[in-house]
Amino acid sequence: MTKEVKIGLIGITALAMLIFGINYLKGINMFQSANYYYVEYTNINGLAGSSPVFANGYKVGTVRSINYNYAKPGHVTVEVEVDKEMRIPKGSAGELVTEMLGTVKMNLLLNFHSTEYYQPGDTLPGKTNAGLMGAAEEKLVPQIEQMLPKMDSILHSLNKILADPALGATLHNAEKLTANLDVATRQLNILMQKDFPQLTGKLNTIADNFLVISDNLKGIDYASTFNKVDSTLYNVQMLTEKLNRKDNSIGLLFNDPALYQNLSATTANAATLLEDLKAHPKRYVHFSLFGKKDK
Image 1 (tube, rainbow, N blue to C red):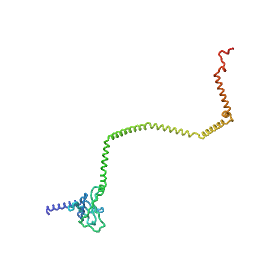
Image 2: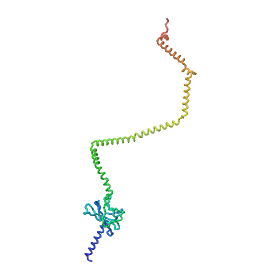
Image 3: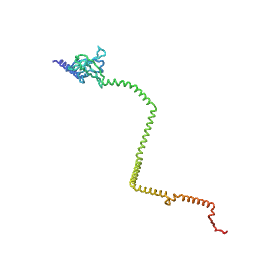
Image 4: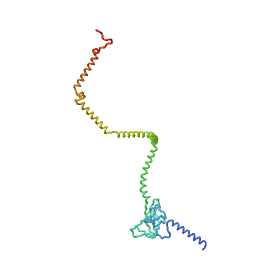
């Protein structure tokens, strides 16, 4: 074998290994028999070659190629390689699903009610499913579009508020109020540290005095005290009854009208005597420094 033949065989082997490695990285098994089908779409939503093909969540094939169908403008034909044992019932479709990260995969929606099957090389109808991202786009985007004018109005109002000089004055007043609160807090802390302990000590002293008074009150014989009070009240009652009766001298003094009249007459006579004494003192008093003269 010549040197040139060896170099050629090595080159062919290297090329075959390169092709096999590239296909292996794409998920294509060149040593496994497969059937080829075509799926037609109007929008492939970013489907890429070598993307996996699933049926009931299980990988059954790979996307081999994607070609624009120039015979039917607006349509894209996707060539799909599936396992040879995989039989696709008629009425099935290839659905493109967009995942959260933006990748697109193909799901074969199999029609298990059909007893007829597509033949390798047949074309299946295609469907698109935007998935969670599409649902979010369909529902959230219109709401966001409705919110944008409101957000613009809110931002405009916020700018007006921020540009209002009254806001600066309000912030200045708030700063002053905060400073006053800080001063009040420090004064309250001083009060709590100095005056409050003294007040607490006085309150404790008052409480101790109340305890002493309470102990003293506990030592009082209330029964004996109330007995003495009852005895005193009884004596007062007896005295009052005697004063109201006429069978004793004090009762006669308070209840005899004749005695009252005599006292009134005596008082009147004494008053008349005093008036006459003031008017004619010589009738009652004879007094001389040199003795009585002979007449």
